[in-house]
Image (cartoon, rainbow, N blue to C red):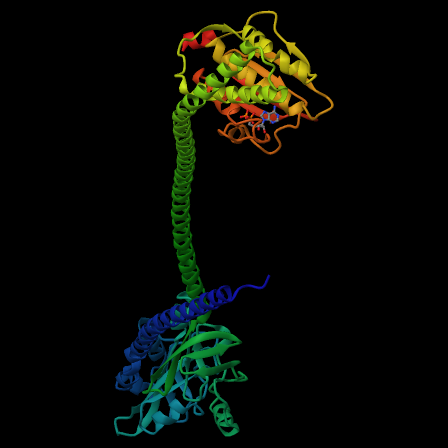
Length: 576
Ligand code: ADP
């Protein structure tokens, strides 16, 4: 996957930041190093100058010395040699020596050493020539006799008549300064007006040339044998800018200090690598600190996010719990609504039945009178022994029977429900209903069978009312089977722990898509007009409810219907 733009930007910013920090640290350490280098250089300059100043007037003083003046007259050389040796030792000089006007050394502090100056002629040396012109002479060079470098300082020696009678000179070894630079571990060099390195903490650099020398100048230097046989090779260095230089490809910070009195220059080379090391270590330390701080911040942030996550998880758990409770409440409300709806339905039904009850009172009253009258007429006709017309009689009795049926059914509503409940054996109830129905069963050629337990099933109820229910249901079953070939009615009595159960099964038309709620509606019937009023199930349901029970209806496989009545057992009712 390619890194995102933000990631690239972050890398860029980090790199940029590190570079800026590196440059800032580098320039800080560089400035610090330059400052320190300037301080060291000023110190070296003053040391060098004071070392030279210490003895610069010594040749002049000696030129006035009576022994020295006498020496030019070649008098008592030995005691002069001793005297010069003593002076040289006390003033830490390499040599003090006296030359005559031709440059020949007459007496010298190193008279007794192997490479003594005595007898040597130094007329080619500039310091001799300067003194012979009546001036103080000064010259840095390698000794042609000793091959040791040093600063030569000279003064003319005047005879009592005022003429120059000789030259007194001395040689100062500056090697001790070089040693001090070396010990300090610093890279320092001193160059003369020709750019030739006179002194250096690094011996390889000594007598190297910093700048190109003209051939003319080279021959002049050769003539005065300033550096004797040393080849004066160019130093491998370059001065890139004011404070930057490389020597033998090693980068240095460069600080220079001019010494105008002698046209000399001091060079101080500070190692740039040490600045780079200090810069890198500072940068790495800073990066490590920043990384640690960042890691600590990230750690804190992760913990904070974790805590927030846990909190939100707890919140969502609370929310889920609240949702669950809400769902339960909604379900409860739905239940309550359904219960309310059922109660309202029940109320409507009860009020319909109440209205029906009133209706039945009046219908019973209205029908009762003519029926009684018709019965009386028929009885009278029988008594009169006159043969009545057969058709009339049969029509009338059919009419009477139908009207009687109507009144019987309607009477149920007019009669207040008997509350006289007792222990009733369901098997006895079935027996009573069977007796009532035998004519229908026979006429309808119904095959029937009862499946009864070998013990009584006792419920609490009114036997007659329960008989009415069973009779209704069995009659419905018979009626439903009249058009069928197979006509089998089965009644089973059983019980659960709490209820007695009567199951009436037929092989009739079945109840189709209807439910018991549809069928039990008063006046709901599928019979032809005059054959049923649709009150049987309404009455039966009402009776069963009075008993604290209920009726179910369902289709039977493959054909027919099953009606189930549940009535609480006697014991259950007592317990309750
Ligand atoms: P009725 O018998 O006067 O029609 P009911 O209330 O007894 O009134 O019955 C209502 C209706 O229920 C019947 O018209 C009939 O359609 C249906 N029914 C009742 N019992 C059965 C049954 N065993 N098989 C099929 N349908 C039945």
